[in-house]
Length: 83
Image 1 (cartoon, rainbow, N blue to C red):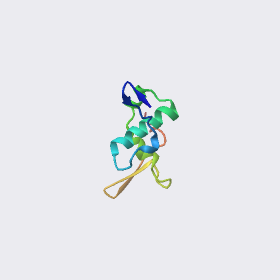
Image 2: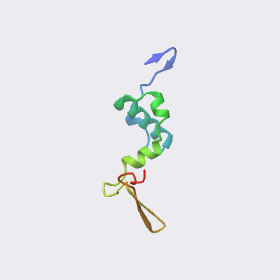
Image 3: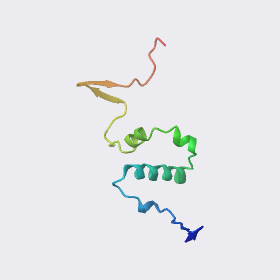
Image 4: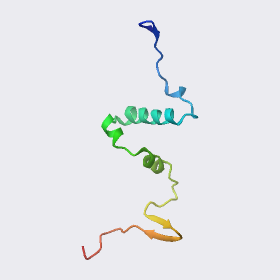
C-alpha cells in the first residue's frame, strides 16, 4: 500500500528476528500492550529483566530461599513476634 508516495508496511510480530535483542524487547512491549492492555506508564514502570527472570524461573525453584556463598537463607513467613 502506498501512502503519500511511500510504502506503508503493516508490522507483523512474526517478522521480528530473534537475533536482534532490541526488536525482541519491542515485541515483548507490544505483546504486553495488546494482551494485558498495559499503558505506556505501566511499561515505563516495569522492570522487564526481572519480569523475564520471573517468567522463565524453573518450577522447582523456590523464590523464598536464596543461596549466597554456600549459605541458604529462607524468607520469613510472618513478622517476628517483637514487631
